[in-house]
Length: 284
Figure 1 (cartoon, rainbow, N blue to C red):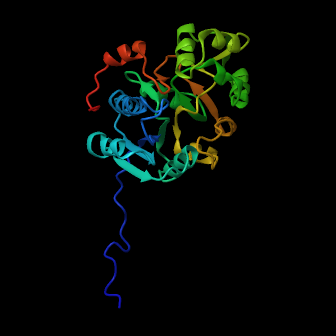
Figure 2: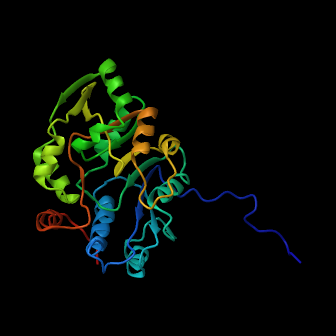
Figure 3: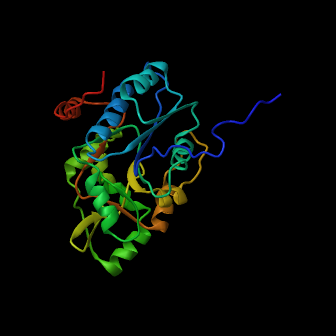
């Protein structure tokens, strides 16, 4: 027979979630395939630079999708996020949706894929844009020209009516080349692919932003992000519906500075030299 009642009945859970929450979905099933060979170092670099270069108090939530024991041991005993969810592989979009849906609506969610490199003070300029422009859905910190192709109809309409909107090719070629390297595309193919594309730059009450964002890295208030999340049962998922849904909710913006960048699955000599100049203490 049952004896007494659970002593937690009627009590509130401790409120340990800070107003800013970093959310990263990780996945490293092995490192013996060519694709996964450097992925452990890539993910460790992402998580470590995201934390160390933010300069803001935060709660760090990592949802791990069925990674190998060696990486999970590093997460648990060296990196030690504030919240760690260890699950089987339920897919990136499902894990992201599940993680963000647990957060208070007032939280600023900072979502990242697990292969993004974060530069010094990457977060504060994004928060400034989030709070400076009206009705912002999300803000990213690395500009990529191909991201102007979709998910910015509402943002451009607003800018034409309420701000100064410029059209041109403002993103430096070096940044485009770095992005091409990270996805395994030649520099020549990147140029050919984007030769007719334009960057759209908004100036509003003294601050500038690009009229786009990126689903690989963005921040926004949880109330908006949760309303835009689209469930997908694929392992990787189609991200365009999320971009479009966020644009329908509010503005999708990006800093004109490159405050983060996509690494892909390889850290080449050029990138390794750049990372070596950062103070990284948690990779061991």
